[in-house]
Amino acid sequence: MNQTALDHAIQLHPDLWQIKDLLSRPELEELVRRINIEPCWKKLDLQQDFNRESMIWNNDGVLDWVWTMLHSLDFSKFGLTFSNVMIWRDREGYGISRHEDNERVTAAMQIYLSPTVANLGTWFLDEIEIPFVQNTGYLMHNRNRLLHGMKSTVPVGYTRLSFYALFDQLS
Image 1 (cartoon, rainbow, N blue to C red):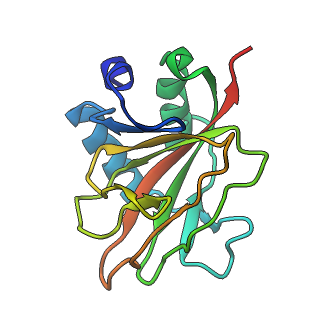
Image 2 (image 1 turned 180 degrees about the vertical axis):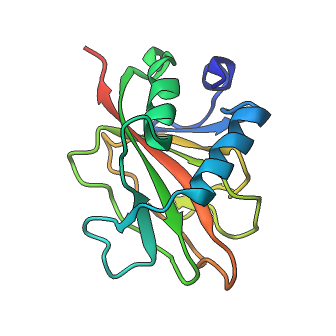
Image 3 (image 1 turned 60 degrees about the horizontal axis):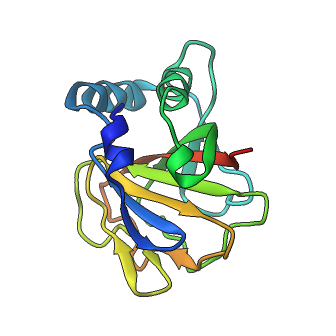
């Protein structure tokens, strides 16, 4: 993973940064390849009625690999330390309306992994869009509980892959 992508994150709001090209091309291709052959998925807690699945953690598996790469990065610029990661698979019809993350989320980063598709990004405060562009995403502090969500649903025949990392406050 590319520390320079974090160092050059674009601040869009006091609690929100856009991140571009976090993974090298070989890392991205290998990650997507491994996700696409992973057989172990489950419905995301508190979202069982949505068409989102989360990869199940296996020792020495895909999540372990991504966790190791993220753990090697320095998030101190954001006042954060990496804690955990999930890989999400959103299927046709998935969408999530405007919401606040719960107070247990100190900060989160979502990086989009599927090929670019218009209108599948995340909107913050109804005015700032992080477009769904492969190998880009956002890092959001949750101290002010920014409203965010999608304005469109995943289209028929498409799968929206991403990883979602969680952070603790740097002590």
